[in-house]
Amino acid sequence: MGLGDRLSRRDLLRSGAVLVAGMACERSLRGEPHGDFEEPKDEAWELGNDLIRREVGFRPGIGLYTKQLSNKSTKTDLLVPGRDIAKARPEFSFNCDGKPCNSNSGAFELLGVSDASTGNGQSLSVRMKHKNIPLEVTALYSIYTGHGACRKSLVIKNTGDAPLSITHLMVETLELGLGPENEMTLWTQYGVVPREIFYTGRSEDACVMVVNGRTGDGVAILNEVPGYMKRTEVAGWDAENSVRVSAMYDTDVMPFERRLRPGEEFTTASASLLPFRRDDGFNDSRWRVPGYSAAVLERRIDKQGPPWIYNTWEPFERGINQEISMELIEAAGAMGIDIFTIDDGWQQEYGDNAVNLTAFPGGLDPILKAVEATGMRLGLWIPPAAIGMTTECYKAHPDWAALDLEGNRRRGPWRDRRR
Image 1 (tube, rainbow, N blue to C red):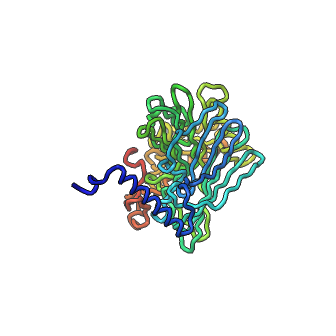
Image 2 (cartoon, one colour; image 1 turned 90 degrees about the horizontal axis):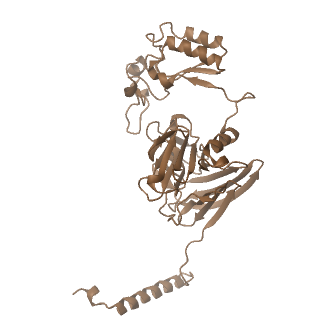
């Protein structure tokens, strides 16, 4: 018979009381209070307008998290109630010199918070310092007057004496409590193509929408990460009654890496969360998303606004040629297009810039003349991080080729599929 078998319930209770008394005595010797144990106190801040509310909290020993995201116009709370913030997805995350830096890992301490009212809305800045790595992170939240969206970005600063390398950067992650898996639908391609709710959106998915088909409640995720570094992940199969959405920089196809010099700051691209309810008047995504994009996100280059661009990739892909281009140039010119871009297929090989004379027997001179005759400008797609292995440049300098995370030479993300 072991010791545990000889202890009665009374003995166990008595032992527990002695243990607690001993801990209290030890705390007294260290000058600490020995009353009831208290949970760490949260600090919380709220920003919003008539359409949306976001409440952000910071808990010592855990870190930054979102307490609630609400669609005020429909009186709908969008996050899973009663979730354990210590086990929740991080509010932001990245790797610094290969070491994970997560917002809710207890690695950050709060330095300060500031809010401001501007002419077009409200902003909140939460500034934190990593306990073990010489860097600061400021989370920036903005809500704009008349728009039901919350926009977020990060400022990462190297406060040390040596460079820091930032990779695997995630700007925004939330677990949306919109309903069970069998009621959820993901809409991609700006809300027109239905997908299953386990999906990775890339450059063509600047806006994805997660919607409950029964209630119509949903959230649009607008990721402003540029070009092929854009990555928006959605997962809804591994947690009951929730869908996880994440807006981030890419980690594999076109992996992101930013090297920060001592004292240097890097401001990330922004990500916006825009709650809506389908087929509910002005709460519908078809009303809210275009209005927010046009008023807040759209870049204005000059008085006439951003240029209109036509790109040949859809539906011609590498099948573009001189004859098709001439027909398209005439149509694009009549429609008032500013830039006519020929995508992949004009070049003989990646990185060489020699024209594919099979598809364009006259070279690009006839194309350029036809484009300029309509008042448009000519654009050409090129892969800045890919090169063909048969090019003279590659043969002479294979060590110049870009490498992926595994150290393999990058030859282009669609090369095998397109040929």
